[in-house]
Every structure is written in C-alpha cells, then in structure tokens.
Amino acid sequence: VRVKRPEQVQLARSELPIFAEEQRVMEAVAESDVVLLSGATGSGKTTQVPQFLYEAGYGHPQAEGRQGMIGVTQPRRVAAVAMAQRVAYELGVKLGDTVAYQVRYDSTVSRASRVKFMTDGVLLREVLQDL
Image 1 (cartoon, one colour):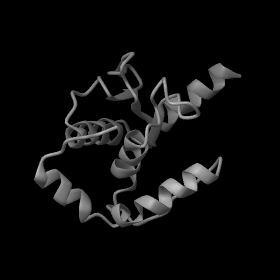
Image 2 (image 1 turned 90 degrees about the vertical axis):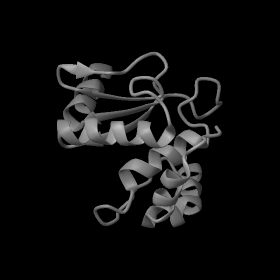
Image 3 (image 1 turned 45 degrees about the vertical axis):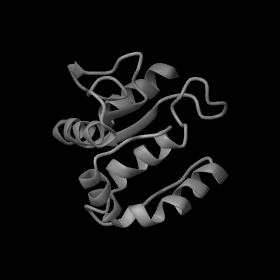
C-alpha cells in the first residue's frame, strides 16, 4: 500500500527509534506467529508498527495470509483514541475509515477499517465472545 505523507510527518517518523528497525520487525512478523516488541516510551512502537503492517498489506481482505484487522491495544481509553487519531493523521486518512478506535461505549470502526486501536478490555471481550 502506498501512502503519501507530508514531508514534516515523514521527517518526524524517521527520527523515531523504531523506524530504523522496520526491516527487522517485518522479517520477524513474516517468520513468526508471535512477535514481542519492547522499547522505551516514545520510541514509536504504538504508532509506527501498525503503519509498517498496513503498508506491507496486512489488514486487507484480498491479501492472502494477511487478511483480518490490525489490532493495537492500549490500557486506557484516552490513549486508544489519541493513538488512533495520530495514526490516521500520519496516514492522511479520516478517523473511522482506514484507522479507527473502539473503547467501551464508543467506536469509530467501519467496514473500511483496517487498523483498530482498542482498550485491553475491548480485546478481552472480543476473545471471550469467540470462545
């Protein structure tokens, strides 16, 4: 997926520590069923890794082996909403289209959503419903 970002957004992304690790992150995702990332606060894990995945074709219904939604959890409602807003801005999309959030009693998720930010509790409820 091609994304046209403003130069200032691209420059800000390139300064985040995780940006230099994109190749390693994507190789790990391709080779493993589970990948754990650890990094300092502010290193870009939450905002950049979902974008790496989206741009590599994950979350697209037609992408064989990469279907489904890219899910990102946050412990707090405010963080889930703020991170969704940030990633939508960086991708140049309207919140609720490609990038959305779901917290208790509020959701911007649509059929077009490919990246969903949610609270830990929302994910837990989804898992329990699938059992």
